[in-house]
Length: 217
Image 1: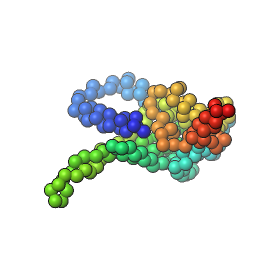
Image 2: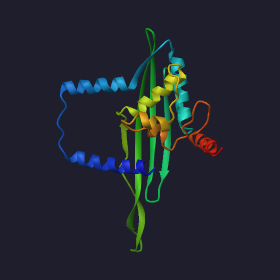
Image 3: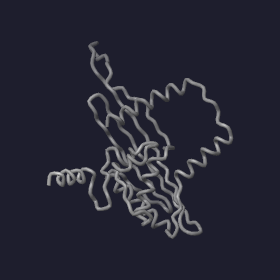
Image 4: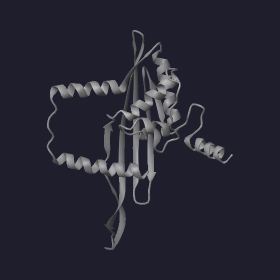
């Protein structure tokens, strides 16, 4: 939790510094390369699978990740959204994770595009002046950040789990395992303040207790 709050503060400071500096414009070739990178990161084709099969599997990916995800179905797409809250001694962090998963039929199966966007806000204590002139403590709200995720880690985990539910992969990755494999970007939308259930329904806490009990035995 401390890492998440620290990351939010660092991100805000970095944005402030970036806003004051001059960026070199991307060349057309760099823009095209970045576009292709993001398309490959967020897109998969599942041969032999219908859009409905893929969407039902994606629905389950979110429900297993965390009980707070609310999933809405519409045609060939779903939206999965959750609000999260972290309280620490000297800071509070809140935010929203939003996913859009869209499918379309292709010649041999179904194309899937998954997009995650995150919104976060942190609040820290700050001195304030009370109505009688005395000093007190209040909360200062940091700016809200809303961005599409453009680093691959969370997409790698999403598609790995989708592969498993569609019988394209024999291994289900827990957050503990995914953190070792996917280090380019954040796994917070599935792994922070989350249940992290495996397909058998066991949460990360339950698995940890079972492991501790096995170690004792």
